[in-house]
Image (tube, rainbow, N blue to C red):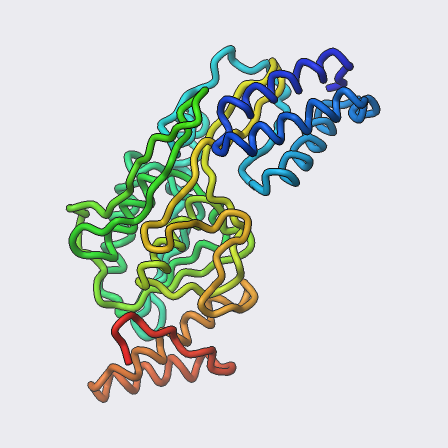
Length: 343
């Protein structure tokens, strides 16, 4: 779609209002809004004549100031509804019928559950679908994995999703009540915040996965809720992270209607981990064992097998583990980081 000067001026004025009233950090929102308004007055957007190019330019400029990968300015070919679907803090808008069908066909993003050599479990999860819809699949996956001796969770292609699935899945790895995360969400039009806490759940379907090693695979595409899951378990020393530094997006939000054909992905909240008192925004999560993403699975398998070899006393089981280890081949990775209390 081509875009004229009037449409660009209207879009920037509306976007600036949203940044001032809604963006998670008021001072930064004011700064980004002022930058866009000043560039518009100087005529810097006069040469941009198509909607997609306009949205790309503004997104790049906003992210340069805010250092926030969730903040984006987007074009939509269809006329947007007068009121975009609202969502609870930290959650996206409810899916429509087409999206629900896609979710079912994609098995609520649980792509693969496997039993690997050496009695190691493997779970590949590509998004965190809300627990109301995907909880049954999550419970089935964890039931399949319950009797394994170590678990690898593959989030290398996981771009994020809903906090409810994060809380459900995370609850399998802890006993008792454990504080996972806080989400401070800006109250619209103010400089105040509403804080929502995420804790492990008192009940999960089936067995919890306790006292066993857990490995999380990451890549540069691991983003948002997938990063929170990784960060929470790493901070609580419940998982070893293997792979690449993650994308670095800790400020969730939702759509903000700008004009008929433009909307902003507007971050309204920020995560606060109760252990580190901070988050991974802009810098990503550093793995405990850093390897290229294509080597992460084999590296985690080797780490898991080496750990099991050290603790296994049954000769038959030990022989099976050593065979599985020999079949992997390749050099030994760095040793596991020590858990708190270990010598």
